[in-house]
Image (cartoon, rainbow, N blue to C red):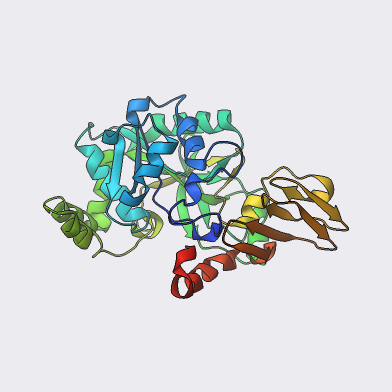
Length: 346
């Protein structure tokens, strides 16, 4: 059994804490351990350390070594540049196919998710690994607890394997009305972005639906210089695994799970999982409130909030973000502006 942790993202929605030099997965957002460290430790109870791999970009290898120093270089898969999850997974599967039997089960996990029940998570992962030899592509669906509009959904059909169901449809992020309908219907689940399959099952799927990706990886592996590898790898489309493979395949099943989960996609999502204090406010350090509620403050300074509700304040040495928490998704657009006008702040 293998665990593959995807850790090459840039985390732009968590600016100004998340930067190119220290992206989201390396931040300590919940306790004194980074998100990638927590992800690594989460799989240790059921995956041998020598079978845990991390795929990341070259620029993040030094950070990775700092956060998981026991991970040897031989278990770090270098992606020439970030091209979304489909090329990342294909590259990793090709790499692993040269080290393991083709029918070896593998988990694919993002490095930056929140899991609220580690025991339930481990039980679900082990059950999926045990079912991977069915040659199905298993995606984990989270049972919705509220009408979320920030997640994609999976519509489940008939039961194919024990507690695993045929995927009828992948649904894009809904509006509030549709999300309410999904919540009422027991066969819709949040798309978690966590997967389980065998090496050969996913490689066969790439051969069937996106052979160009495998062709580019094969060509890249013959290049003699880093520059050539980067140039060849970057010629492909930036495709998520859902669009490249899962939405096309008839071999996908959803495994519904009920542990507390979040992809921690933006500041608002994070604020929902932080311990709230007086009047539902959160301070990373310390502060004072008068007639203020629902606020989240990341600052090393004393911060006083008076007559303010539902804002997020994030301070670093060179930047301050103040945002209505319901507008947290706009931070991604802000980083596009900074890229052009103030690139030193990225």
